[in-house]
Image 1 (tube, one colour):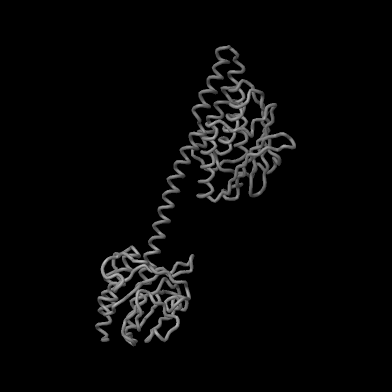
Image 2 (cartoon, one colour):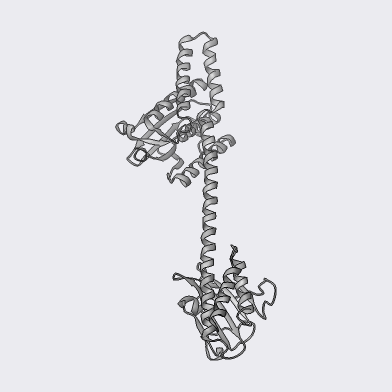
Length: 389
């Protein structure tokens, strides 16, 4: 085969694949041109399925598939099986001049006496195999082997490029989806910080003291309400908050919730190891959202007074929040109200997004401690102090 002819064929294959970003199109084009340009009568292209340890037929031209791109009874060959499977494992091309003398030969639609098999490989990665057969004994030559090996190398580079581009697109699409979800998360978090339902109910409760001319209580709760609003406005959009400030804010928030529910619940709020609280930072909004969900659930499903014991337990890497409550009629194991389930689902969605996007490993648990008859809601958060200093 003349050098010019060799170069012309390689250029033809290369140009034929320009702009193609679909593996199936590339492989069908390869099979078709092995016949049209190289003078073969039969060509089958396989790709390796690493998960199944199989060679899977992807394209074929010849007697079995003369025109269209539909595979009739596509072949699957185990890695190491037959001549094709052996080449897929070894990565070394083979010419078999007489298949009737090779015990590895697998008959497909018809017995053919010559076979040439070349791996589609690049940088020690084997993507698949080109397998061509011919009815004449000794048909394939070293020139055929040289040409087909060069074509297979170009094909491997093209497949590598297509897969890399596909992986990049998928990564970009995934990042875009995460950014959209994170934006939605921030909007939900902002709504949680200044929940209109809570704000209006708190103002209505304060209005009662104003109309009752209880100036001391009215001023006390207005002052608490304004501190809470200022805190939320100051940290509006913050992704991380100082735990010391968060605990102080929760105190104001719980005081207003107690007012809102006409003293139907009591609470204690503590940090188990307070010396460490100055060195703790946590993701914003989750704690307040969890407390609101817990309170709303309890107050909507119980008619007796509830006591919340809220404890933070700190370590260098983690912050554990436990909300314990006990009451005369424990309904923890009953189906919670639909509204609570929806809010809880939103909270879990926020946690999922933070874990996915930030790698925070946040976890939430609800369980009943039968020994103490206390229902416990726990939230494990990362201590982000080291990441922000």
